Image (cartoon, rainbow, N blue to C red; front, side, top):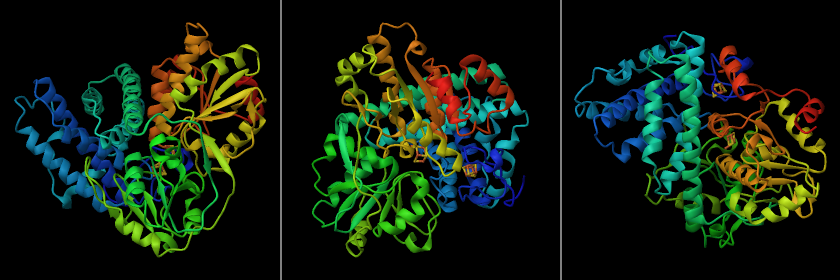
Length: 546
Ligand code: SF4
Ligand code: SF3
C-alpha cells in the first residue's frame, strides 16, 4: 500500500464483506481520508510513546497534550470526520508537539520510529502507506493491536466529552497513551496484548465513570422523562451526536429566538437531564438512529448540528444546513469552532434556522427514557419485588449501536418476541430498533429501560452490580440477565472491553462478529468469556431467555 488508491479499514461492523474496505468505505470515507487517518493514528501513537517516556522520567505531561491525543483518536472514529484538511492539520500539530517534547526527554533510545518521523505534507501520503493496519504482518498481533486501538478510540471519545465539562482523569490519559505506545512495541507478545486489551476495559470503566460524573454534576441525574416525537409549528434546529455541553450552549443561546431545538439519534437522552427541562423551546426528538438521516435531515427543513459521529455523507439538498463542531467534520459543511472551556457561537445556525420552514412531521407520540443508575436505584424496591414475585423473569441488555444492514431487523424481532416477563435494558442508538414499539410495562416498570447514550452502558453495569448486591449473589453471571449487544463503531468496542473487565460472560455480539478479530483472538474471547454471535431470533430466545 503506497498510494491513495488503496486503503484498508475494518474498524466498524459495516466493513465491506465483513473483511475490510479497500477502495472506498461503506461509510463513504475516501481512500485519501483513510490514509490520513492512518497517519494521524501513527503520529498520535508516536507522540504517546514520548509522553509515556516523559512520565517514566517523572516529568508532567500538559493537559493540552492529553486533550490533543484524545481528540486525534476521536477524529478517526467511524463517521466522525471526513475532512482531509482537518486531519492533515491535526497531523501537523501532532508532529510539532512531538518535536517540542522530544527535546525534554533525556533518553530517547526506547522510542519507536513513529515518535521520530518528521515529514512534510508532501510526504504524508507515502508515509501513510507504510503505517496502516496491514503494516503489522502477524494476524494475531494485528488483531489485538486494532482491538486495543479501537477500544482506545471509544475511550478517547468519552474522555473528550468529560474534558468538555472541564473534568479530566490523568490516570486514564496516561494509560491511554501507554497503551497506544504499546501497540507499536514489537516486543509485546500475544499474551501481553490480551492482558492489555482487558486493562483497556478497566480504564473504559473509569472513563465512563468520569463522563457519568461530569454529566450528572453539570446537568443532574437523568430522570424518567417523556419525549415528544412529533413537531411544533416553528422553525427548528436539530442537534445530533453525543456532546451535552454543545447541547447546553445551543439551548441557552437560542432560548428567545423563536426557534425550537430538537434532538436527533444519540442526543435524545439530553431530554432526560433535569438541567435541560427548563427550556420551553426544547421541543422533542426528531427521527431515528444515524443511518436514516438522509431522508430525515431533508424533511427537517432547518439546520442540523453534528456534535460527533455519526455523519452520513450529506445530500446536496441539505448540505448547506449541515453544521459540524468538535471532532466532527465534513468537507464543504460549516464548522463551529471552540476549544474546551470556550463558549461556542451558534448565532449563525440560529439565524439560518429563522429563515427555514418548520420541520415536516414524520412521527407522532412520545417515548419514555431516563433510566440511568440513579433513577433505577430509586426504583430498586419495586424491581426486586417484581423479580421475587416472578413478575419479572429476566433482564436482557440490548445496548449498543444501530446500523443500516438489513440483518439488524433481528433486534426488532427479538424485542417483539421476548416473553412479556422480560425487561430490556438499553443504551446507545441500538434502542431505535424497539423504543417506539408498544412493549408495555410490568407493574408500572416499562419493558424498555433506556439509560441514555452508549457511554451510559456504564449505568447498566452499575445496575447489574446493584442487583447482584440486592440478591446477595457472588457472581454477576448468576443474575437473571442476558447480554445481546449490537455493535457498529468503536465506542461499542470500549463498552465491550469494559463489560469483559467487569467479568461479564456469555455476551452475544451482532449482527456480525468484528472482522478485526482474527480466528485465534476470537478463540481466546470464546474460551475466557464465552463470547458468541447471534443466530436466528427463535433459537437465540431459547438460549438467552430459556
Ligand atoms: Fe469501512 Fe467502516 Fe472503515 Fe468506513 S469505518 S471505511 S465502513 S470499515
Ligand atoms: Fe450510535 Fe454512531 Fe454507536 Fe453512541 S451514533 S451509539 S453508532
